[in-house]
Amino acid sequence: GSPRTAVLAAVCILLLLCSHGAPGTHLMLCQPHRRCGDKFYDPLQYCCYDDAVVPLGRTRKCGNCTFRVCFKQCCPWLVKRPQESSMVKVKGQNCHLDPSSDDTVCHR
Image 1 (cartoon, rainbow, N blue to C red):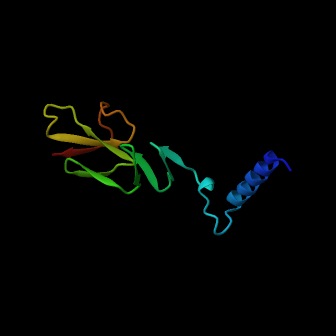
Image 2: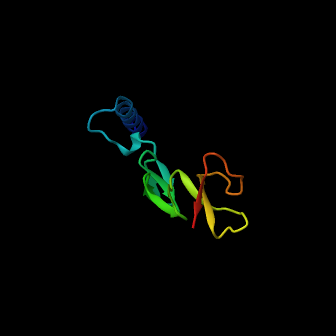
Image 3: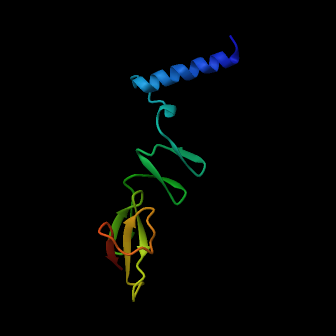
């Protein structure tokens, strides 16, 4: 057999193990992985925050609020006194958009 046949056979076996969830085969290649800088991570357990892999439950403070960094972000609230308050918005939302029902106002 050629090296190409061996590689194809290995891929087929791996796909079978992954699709059947073979016991004891928690293979990294079977899981959906993403990249964060030069590291790979499982998005079901971690996220990429500030170029670091962090657990999904990781929290930070935003004024007097606490938020989960994998799902939300802290935005300065551009009102009369922006130094006094900020807002937690869904991660990826534009911080300059008007507040929505999903947002939380946080005081410093």
